[in-house]
Length: 82
Ligand SMILES: [Zn+2]
Image 1 (tube, rainbow, N blue to C red):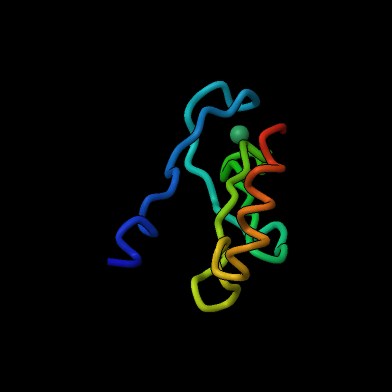
Image 2: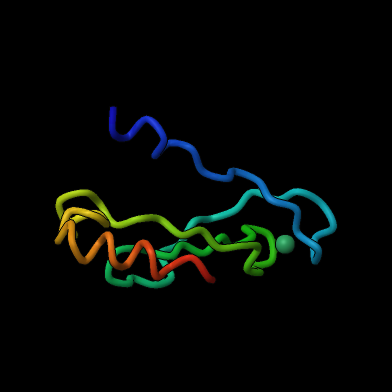
């Protein structure tokens, strides 16, 4: 079950520098608590064509909501805004 979506990654993105869809290289850009940010680099010119946020692997960090039901409820009501 896990991993089926892992294979999905952008294989080509439009590059404004190359003026055509280019193959991209996925590169780990940043590791944050709870998520990782990947950078897509054009294999032609090396420009960054986009980023992707990936939730941290299950088991590494408890997913949201498993901590304290009470605080979760409170947080949920308080997070209606952006
Ligand atoms: Zn390019």
